[in-house]
Amino acid sequence: MEIIYIRVKVWEDVLASYSSLELRYGWQPSDPESWTNQYGYFSYGLGYYIGFIGDPDIFGTPNALFAFINIPLSDHNRRNVFQISPAVGLSFSLEPYDPITNPDNDSVGGRFATYISLGFGAEYRISNKWDLLYGIDYTHFSIARLYTPNFGFNMYGLNLGFRYLYNADQIKLNKEPNNSLILPARFKRLKKTKNTKLNESSIEVFAGF
View 1 (tube, one colour):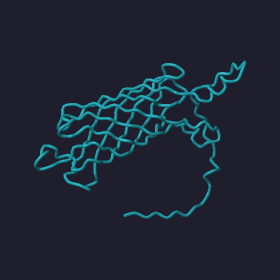
View 2 (spheres, one colour; view 1 turned 120 degrees about the vertical axis):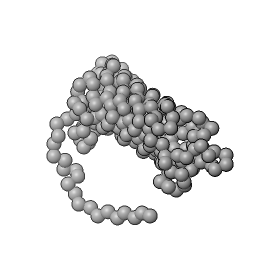
View 3 (spheres, rainbow, N blue to C red; view 1 turned 90 degrees about the vertical axis):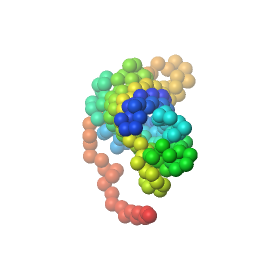
View 4 (cartoon, rainbow, N blue to C red; view 1 turned 90 degrees about the horizontal axis):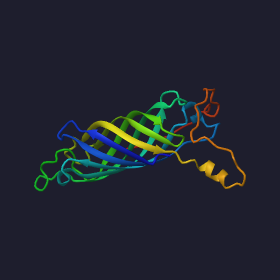
């Protein structure tokens, strides 16, 4: 499970730099029959973001709730594994543009915005339950022109963090007397096989505005 993820980034537009802190909690499927076993048992979950972007009186202190997914890209059995991590959610606590009280903020015109992030990096396995996370990422705040101005925030930067894998199955076994079985905290990637569960036909209806 991912617990704490600390990011340090550089914003190349109006400001010289900014920083942020993320807290993530995720799950990793453990069913060997699941289709995710062919893709390294990627993890997914929810996260909370706090950003420190320049003058808080102008831009506010953006917070965000988001959903994320971590997809391994390289051999999952190695100590250093490359991965990609997209995330999407809703940001809030922004200071909107106002021609009288806040004319310097020409990026967002509302207190809420969409939160979009895409990270590329790696996890380095320190121990059986601890990982060092590092990489680069792109973060974007926008309100889809629901309000104006809508230049949004586009931030590119570096990130650094730690991940702790909580092994719930091992804790259940430890409650049994005279148990010496040690379960792995991670699941290995399996060889791809034909997926028969998805060989179905369906009709879907989508509506939007």
